[in-house]
View 1 (cartoon, rainbow, N blue to C red):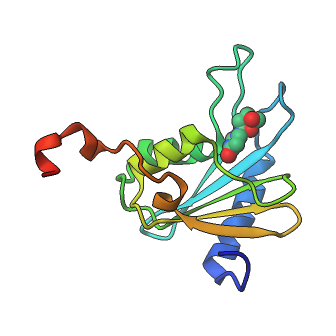
View 2 (view 1 turned 180 degrees about the horizontal axis):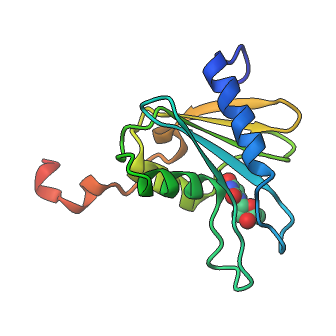
Length: 145
Ligand code: THU
């Protein structure tokens, strides 16, 4: 879906993700990532990656934004969009773990706007980012038939 005009709310969301990037705690990779999640009331929730000396506990920017918003009382499934920003060659692309978490907490058609510091961007839906995902429905086989 690259690359025509991005609508103003999404431009704003990418700007917020860029701002969030500066808050990253990245003593190990040095690779800053920012995320900005738009809730149903139009409020933006910031996320950045937060690394750890044991590496495994590192939390990506996307999950930080989602978990923060959930903890602040915003129900899953009702977010409007998320923007992600990193200093990558092309637009940044979310890791597999974050894609799985997006599938869990966001509507399948929710837009994910991915950008970089050069101003490039692309947009895909949550479902497009993880085809064939294992979802909450996968746990209830009687409801699928
Ligand atoms: N990272 C994110 O925060 N989001 C992504 O979409 C890709 C990767 C972080 C994890 C780690 O702190 C650093 O980037 C390098 O992988």
